[in-house]
Amino acid sequence: MLIRGATAADATHLVRFINMAADDLPLHFWKKSVGPEGDPWAYGLERAARETGGFSYRNAWLAEVEGQVAACLLGYPAEDEPAPIDPDTPPIFVPLLELEALAPGSWYLNVLATYAAFRGQGCGSALLAYAEEITRELGRKTISLIAEDTHHDALRLYAAKGYREVARRPVVKGDWAVDAREWILFLKPL
Image 1 (cartoon, rainbow, N blue to C red):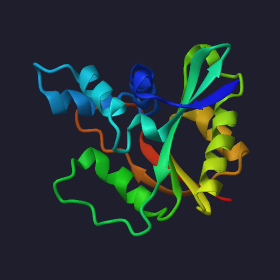
Image 2 (image 1 turned 90 degrees about the vertical axis):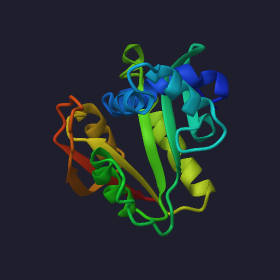
Image 3 (image 1 turned 60 degrees about the vertical axis):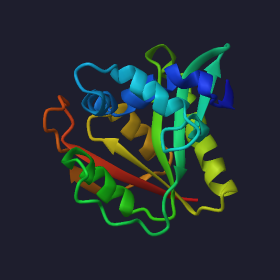
Image 4 (image 1 turned 180 degrees about the horizontal axis):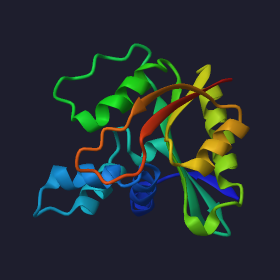
């Protein structure tokens, strides 16, 4: 297995992983952002290929198995002092921002996802270990992540790797069709 930094040319993979990790919430948001005449996937590709922003390829690493992209890690340092949540923030994102604010100064692991054909081959474990290396290199003492209560395999992996649940918030669904009921914040001190 090879872990490498993502490039702008990897945007097609990145949008799939970003969307997969959050059960179509990104696609739901992209659709609302571009309106009925726009292309939500093109919007996501543009965001993944840009140089800056949370979902930029510059914050992503890909695991390759036998030369094929298999899994993705995307993360970045959390703010040391989170700003108040903007009152215009769509309600669907408020619980996530509340949880992120509970882990100031951590390295925030925003996306960890593996294509179905490569699950069970250690990609998630390898990328978690890589995320911990990045966290240490940046001088951060804690790694944080948020998972849905319905991602049972991921929850087992996080528990096995020493991540501990810190807080939960209800999922605000609106017109987003998802089975999850709660977002769960996990932390791991390093």
